[in-house]
Amino acid sequence: MDVYVISSPAHITTIFKSLHVHHKAYKQLPVQNMFGMPAATLAFWLSDDSGITARPHAESTVPPHHRIEHLEHVATARFLTGRGLKASGDRFIGNLRAQLDGKTEIGTQWVWQADLFKWLREELTMAMLRAMCGDHLLRLNADFVKEFWDFNSDLSVLAKRYPRWVFPGPYRKRDGCLQALKRWHGFIAAYVDAEGDGVGEEGWSEFYGVEMIREKHRMWQRMPGIDADSAAAMDLGFIWATNANSSPSTFWLLAEVLRDPVLLSRVRTTIDAYHLPPPITITPSAHPDLNFTALLSDPLLQSLYAETLRLRVTSFIFRGPDRQPLHLGHWRIPKDAVMLVSSYHAQMDTVAWGGEGERPVAEFWADRFLKAAEAVEDEGASDLFATTTTTATRPHVIGITSSASATSMPKLKTKFSMKGRANFWIPYGGGQRTCPGRYFNKLIMIASLATVLSDFDVELLPVRPEAVDAQGRPLLAEPDWRDFGFGALAPKGDTPFRIRRK
Image 1: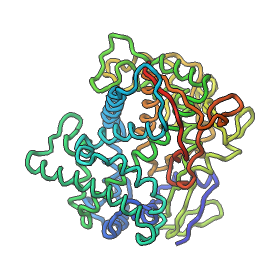
Image 2: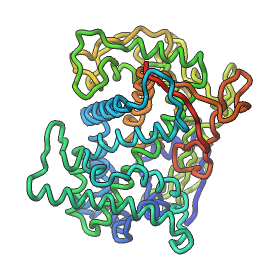
Image 3: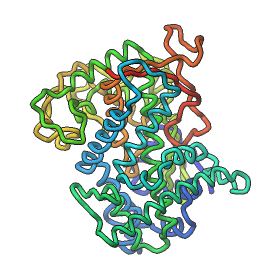
Image 4: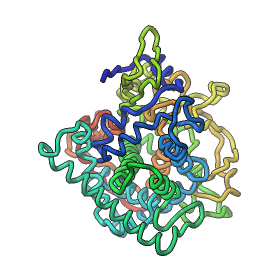
């Protein structure tokens, strides 16, 4: 199999704009081993040549109920956009707040903690799993969060296809996660057969969790080659995709803010501007006094979010020409080849990110994506970002009732801007197969930052007395480069901190 590494922004744009590319190489190369997908399931998936869009390719003979690429895409998009995103966002925020409220060991006096990443990772993962899968997965598997992160720590070994007899440990960890998911699936099957789905508001089920999981399980039952092992592997892949990137990304965002007193003051002031006035009606599961929908559109918070992903996400993006060769300039990529794009190299391009008056590309710069409001009035915006500068009404408000959606949005003097850089900022890939979880990840990162800073005082501590920069700020741990290409990099080493309630 020939692999072409693509680095030119113009060629990356051509790939993402093309309607005739697939990402089957992603399943062929790492996914089968990473999540334990059975060979029969992989063969069935790769046989689907109908495409991801509603209308199948004209030459495809795949029956409508076997169009796994399209059906998976539709189910996932429904969960991660619009009202599905609002419902999931409300549950996540409510879960996180309840967990943090329940940490009785943290009072109004400083409490020392060993590692910010591990502390935050556990809280985010539990809040996310309950928001997606309900309570039964963790009730049946009390150690699942730990087992999941142990599995994730060895993922690169699995992806490289080392045999089990050489590295048995990573396989045992993966098997443990798969068995936990099968246990949950067995519980669902027993109770659904006896009592029905228990589906309530917004498609939420006590047993399955979000409607998407129930919909996918029913869909898989109609497809050949998908059995209990397949369902566990695909659910493990989904859980990995929604947790393995959001936790380290949120850590880096919070850590960069905490280590800079001036930036921390700016962010606290920004968050305080989105507190809701007392008459606003709050949904029971939401944070009691923050307009999260407005927070997600704030220019400074968006710039921090985008800069964190630019600097800390290292994704290998796989694409392949579908049915016919793809022409990239004077290059002709044959239809059986694999194209690989590295998000990290695009996001560290010195030409794109090293313009006059800008900080070096390897440095975290909170204002990298900010411009004066009048400078970007007519430039348009990415679908990931809003550039609202005055009060506006948003249709799907997260954390508050719709009657409050037009409140608590301060007038802003700067705007978020991706002008001239959209082809270089690709942490989620691009084109038809852009990561569908991008909106949820943004929500998790910004909402978690706002929740922690609203409820707690947090101070980073140096690992050693000399581990500070010229301004006396604690140095952050280096990223763990062993996982390069798998998404957001976790820190290599601990980040001690102290915390107290406000």
